[in-house]
Length: 227
Image (cartoon, rainbow, N blue to C red; front, top):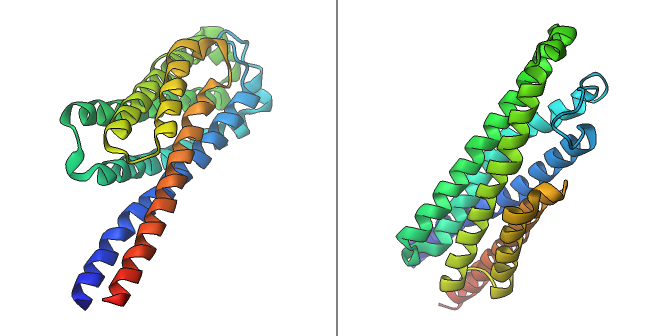
């Protein structure tokens, strides 16, 4: 009996840690978005004046993204862990694929933006005059706002669909996920702060999963004690 309790406790540690990782992703990604949005003009055709005044805050935001990405991978793991044997191959493929594509495009855009800042530090005049800045800025804007956030919307829709079928999160969270996903897919170019929707929704799910895991852990420990 004691050995069974130890094994059960070990199995409960991973979802708990992953739920914390989802919260960590949300905080890091929110911070990164805010730092970039308040430092860089919304238009991808700006003159690049922010490179002189706000490059440090943008660099800080970009340096947070790798850690946010690692935490996001752990969050994907906890969702799959909660699905368990109820995992559907079709929706799980869409769920996993959209999540990985989101991370890949996010990292690519961060690398391009970081390269722009580095080149500007060594040859500021040549960067803007050569047109490299405009090209890099436009590519970064397109990857993040057109492609990465669209994949985030697909990730939310697939997660919400699986959640409705399995009940891993409350139904109202799943329906909210559908609404937020449609917002990202259809209205992103009209709202500068639209990307904030994604990490906020992930934060809600992570907090719920953490609370549910703690509640289940307390119930199982109480049951084991009575046994």
